[in-house]
Amino acid sequence: MVGPTRTCVGCRKRAPASELIRFVAAACGDSFLLTADPGRRLPGRGAHLHPDPACFALAERRRAFGRALRLTGVPDAGPLAEHIRAVSMAARNA
Image 1: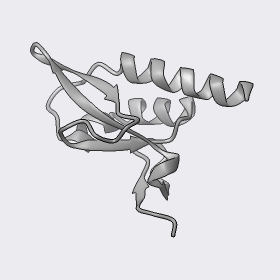
Image 2: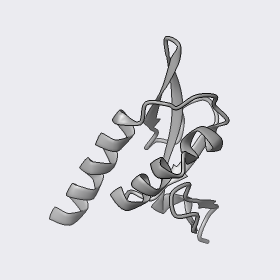
Image 3: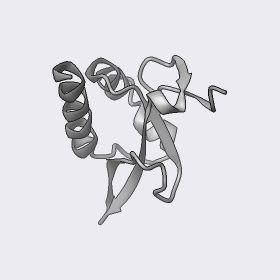
């Protein structure tokens, strides 16, 4: 059994949820921080992204984060970018 499939907000390709990183928007004062959810347990609406800097750049350029999470304004994607960089570096070194 493969499990559920999800769509990457960057490249818009469908993939098994186990291959994608789930992220949520955490409130930080008046704005939102995009936070990776590797355990897939954080509350709130989540969206999925390939652990690839190219997919992250596509999603950022298309302003897909706010639409996927149904947010007004532009969320701070810094923590999510750092998580994706760390995951992609670990995959390259493995």
